[in-house]
Each structure stands twice: as C-alpha cells, then as structure tokens.
Length: 514
Image (tube, rainbow, N blue to C red; front, top):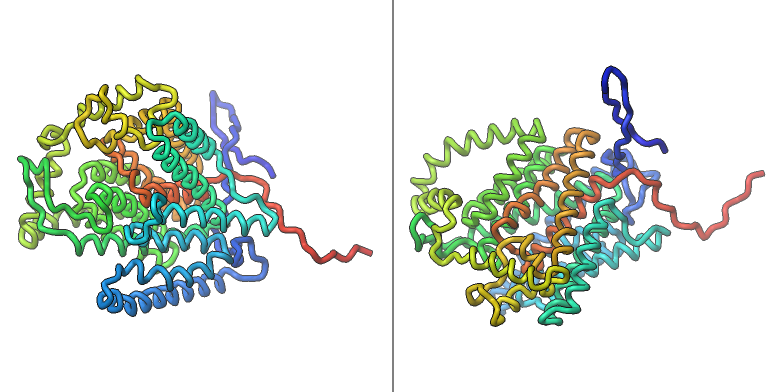
C-alpha cells in the first residue's frame, strides 16, 4: 500500500512530502461483527438499525432495572449502586465476553458505580479491577481471532515510558506500598488505552462508544445539578466558597474536571453527528456538563474549558458557527435570567470568575509554598522522584516547607516530576505533544463530521491540561481511567495506516484448486 503524499510548491517547483494515513474506517460500509472484527455479509443500513434498536432496548432495560431497585434500596437502606451493580453487571458481562467493543462499553456504563465507596475492594479501587478486566477481555477476544492482544499507536511509546518510570520510582519510594498501588493503577490505565484502541475496529464502533459515554456523562452531570446546595462565599471576591456542588465526586474540582471533559465530548458528538440520536445526546451532554461545570465553581476547570472551546472554534468552522450562536444566546440570556432565578449563585459565579486573575483572593491558598515544596522534592531526587503518590508523604518530613495536610502539588507537571522524577515529567510532556501533533496531522484527512468528533475527543484532554496548570485531580481513580479511555479513543481516531490484522486461522481445510 502506497504512502499518501502532500504536494507543496517551493520556488516554482513541486515537492511531495509523505503524510500519515488513517487506518480507522469511519464509513458505515465496513461494519464489525459481534467480536469487533470486520463483517462480510451485514450491510450498513441493517447494522445501523440493529444498533439503534439495541441502544434503546438497553436504555429501557437499565431504566427498568433502576426503577425496580430504587424503592428496594430505600426500604432496605442499601446503596443504590450496590443494589444495581449485581443485575446490571450480569447483563453487561454477558455482552462483554463476546465483543471487545462491549467490554469497553461495559466499563463506560459502570463509571458512576466505580465511585461508590460501598463497592471498594480494600486497597484496590473497583474501577481499577474493572479496567483490568476490560483489558483481559479485549486481549482474549483478539487472540482468539489470531490477532495481537492489543493495538499499538505511535504515541503509546511515551505512555509506556511514563509507566516504566513509575515502576522504577516505586522501588525507591518513601512509602513503597503506596507507590506500588499507584504504579499498578497507571500500568492498567495505559493498557486500557491500548485496549480501547483495539476495540474500536471502525468509525461506527468509535461513535457507539462515544455515544454511550455522552449518555452516561449527561446522567452524572444532571445528578450533580440536583445535589448542589446553597453556595456561600466565605472570602472577598468569592476567593473561597462553601457548599459547592460535588455530585458523586469527593470534591468540586473533580466534578469540574469531569464535566469540563464531558462538555467537549458532547460538543464534538453534536457538531460531528451523523444521526439525530448522536446530535440529541451530544447536545444534552454538552448542556448538562456546562451547567455542572458552572456550579462546580472550579476555576481550574474553567480555565481548561475556555482553552478547549477556543481551540475548537479555531480548528473547526462548523463548531465555530455553532459556538457563536450558542455563546451569543448565553451572553444575552444569562445576565437577564440568573439574577432573577438564582441571585446568590449569579453573584458568586460572577465574583468567582473575576477571582481567576487574583490568586491571592483565597486567604487559605498556599500554592506558592506548595510549588516550592514540589521543587524541593524534585531537586532532592531529580531522576527517580519520591515515588508515585508520595508527594504528601515527602511533604511531611522534617525538610518540608509545605503546609500540613498537603495532598498534591496543585500542578500536574510538578506533581509527576516530584513523584517519578524529571524523566517521568518528560515522558508525560512527550505524550501530550505527540498526541497533539498526530491530531493536527490527521484532522485534514478526515471527513468534516469525523474530524469534528475527533477534535471534541482530543480537546476534552485539553481541559485536563488547562486545569493541570493549577490543580491535580488524578488521585481520583475514576478520573484517571476516564482520561485514559479518552486517550484510547483519540488513539483509535488517529492511528496510522498499517497492514490489516492477521485473520484467525480456520480449522476447516480449504479445498485445493483443480
């Protein structure tokens, strides 16, 4: 297969430069069978109809199960997540063991369940066990089909390097067991990204996963809106606020990170939609996530979301037009409606937005000392770091200059460098730049709608990058694995042209030609 080339004019002559090809088939003419392998006999129309019917049947089954279990959980005093986990888990497991795509969908569907403390498995988080199960199921199905267990991507080498540095750092960690647990989570997360890449055999598979992710995200954000309390500013200019919305998360900043990323996923799905269902669910996810992002009052997440939306408007003409209309309506309606509907919330949101440029607005904010402590830890162990998850441990030693009870470095690069050394921070930076470069290369070679969807997925990670400048929320394992699921979807959308996977060997001898 030849290599695609771009032709540019230099000094009156033409020069051909090689450009990457995309192996993911975004069209509906090459569907995948129940194992995620290319099907031969099914047609696009039949497959779309089957998926539509299966999607709505699945929604009815889930809704019926939850409606039945809700009164039971209230009567018995049992957590709804615990009551729903067993029957829904059995239903999803039956599909997951038959299809790599459904293994990934199962993980996406149980993301809210993974946040339940009632389902914690001792020192191991439930979401980590589920992620490891997804990796094993995908690898098993692909090996049965005679393929490699997982699918590689050009940017994955940086992720593996980051995991290797975590393994090395855990050996010399101050708290070895903590380092080992954090390292195990990262190794599983990297494998999960490669499993998601492998499970998406074609564009329709990727769109199916994104559609379910947007549906789950809309539900989580909608629930978060119903759980927000009476917000109260306890410092000038809303530098510190009490009773911020947290939803199913443990902190408002975690909710802000989740809703910011899902907002970009929803926008990408709505703008790049090929069906009415995708457009409706993408729009619902974007709206509910934007509302949850607002009430979270997470300034770091706001920074990341503004950066992601600005980049989307710059890179996508269709998104630019849609965002111009939506933002115009928001700018006109919000100042008129919110002061009447929720005057306290409007005052706090307005003052909180202004305080983004005023770090000193929060009297309890000790970020300068926290950053200085991170730099001290880096200088103390520049090559191996203090060990994964060991920043708070090192900050409690006699040499520490940080305030007491510091959980993280409030900056992703500083946190990674302090815990896994400068090589670990370099690997993370390399992964970020490599993925960004790959996205920019592939964008012009995709159909417009598919390119918009890919941009939405890619820019959801920009929300994490923007918030990572002032915060670190990945002590939450669900957010950690969600980021790697999104990275796996970006891998699938941007993987290079390669030879097709080797087909499974047939046990039936083929007749010889006469």
